Picture: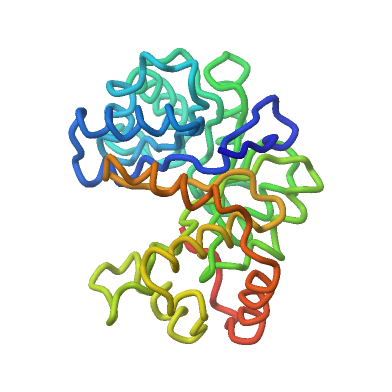
Length: 298
């Protein structure tokens, strides 16, 4: 598994990471998560990303691989109250959420805590950033970051206070490639990409019921990319390899509750970057078709 230096941090991360949303929201069993993450770690994965608001995700990760804490870098996100009594984006919520996450994850520290997609206005207030910095100073996290898209992500990058950025990049979501990633690179930020295969939205023959997927499905109908006309395995492989070919991307997190899926994805990544001609064709088509409201999606 290829590894990349994560910006100016001391971490060297696997290009394929694990996203913990699906195991939480789908109610995966501890046994399945043990199989999934155990095989992934054995195959070379060393980034696990989750969030306080992903249902039972943090607990499952802690129970399944807490005993292997030295084998992976652990990222989580905070900001949403997710059951706490204080409001979203209150400094007390940030502090309490981080403490709760550490207990759930069965660890004394995480490697990165990202603010979870708060608005530009919240970022500009500064108090949630201060709460995150205090957590870092207390040893609860080694690095701090921002997770989000668009103008808020741009502000976070330009602020110079964050070590890490988590943002959306895929064949149907390319705004960040021009707007944000060059500046993140210039500041030496680590970049983790979410939704790297655009939720495989093109595999649905008609508009899916899941509203989370619908914007990408609509975009892909208009983009009409060659890679999405291939079979399921080859099209997903091309989409993932596109994302990992984007300059400035260090790791892409793929969520799954299928215990065998990570090994399958690792085989795709081993095929290497997408050929330059295919990558350029996807970028060119985006520039031709993308509308002003095709912004980064959470």
